[in-house]
Image 1 (cartoon, rainbow, N blue to C red):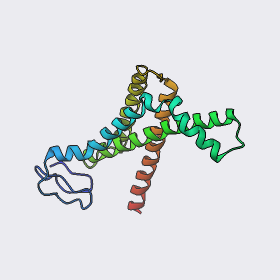
Image 2 (image 1 turned 135 degrees about the vertical axis):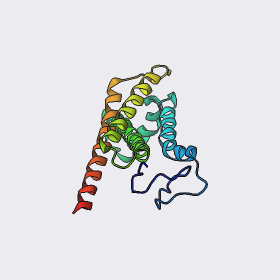
Image 3 (image 1 turned 180 degrees about the horizontal axis):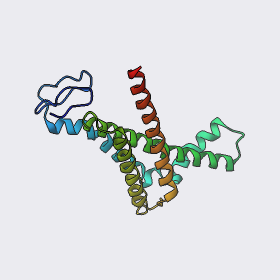
Image 4 (image 1 turned 30 degrees about the vertical axis):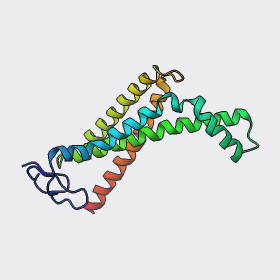
Length: 179
C-alpha cells in the first residue's frame, strides 16, 4: 500500500489531518484535493486581478508616488520613478515566489513517501513559469498594460529563489534528522 509523507498507509476515503498526521473523519478525496490545490488556485486569481488595468503603472503611481514624496521629500522625480519601478518589479518577484511555494505545498502533499523532492520542486517551477507567461500574454489584452518577457523572467527568478530556499531547508532538515 502506498505511504503518505510522514508514514502510515493511505486510509481509504479519508485524508490525514495537516496538524496531527492522523486520519480525519468524514473526509472525502475531493476535500483533500481541494485543501491541497485551493491555495495556489486562489493565488492565481489574485495575480489575475493584479494584472488588470486596476494596478497598471499609471494607477499605482497615483498611490506610490505621493507616498514616496511624503517619505523621501528630497528625492528627485526621476529617483521616485525609479523607486516606483523597483517596487513594482519587487511585487512581480514576490507574487510569483508565493505562487511557487503554494504549488510546492500542493505537490509535496500529493506525493507519496519516497517520491523525489526534486520532482515537486521542478514541477512547481514549471507550473509557476507557465502561469507567468500566460499572465504576461493576458496583459497584452488590457488597455493600459503590456506583456513583457522581462517581467516573466523576474517572476521566474522569484519562483526559483523560493524553491531554492525550500530545497536547502528540506535537505538540511533531512541531514539534521539523520545526525
